[in-house]
Length: 100
Image 1 (cartoon, rainbow, N blue to C red):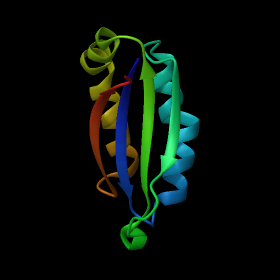
Image 2: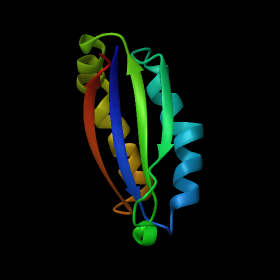
Image 3: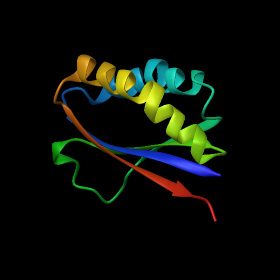
């Protein structure tokens, strides 16, 4: 199993609306691609939250091919929707991990 992990630092000004948008719109769109079968949202602890909270959203898939298909066919549009909704009020970085 593979985990596509997106870690995001969110501005306090948009924190609540961003989290609601993630749960109601963004994550369901990613799951609807059929390339991931589950997800988890985690808030990082022991972080300086003065600039806003940090979240890790993990999407679970069974193959590297699914992950690459997501990147090629869906990631660009879904990332653009994030910027359209929240501009520069967040910073995200992405990693891929294999469960061993």
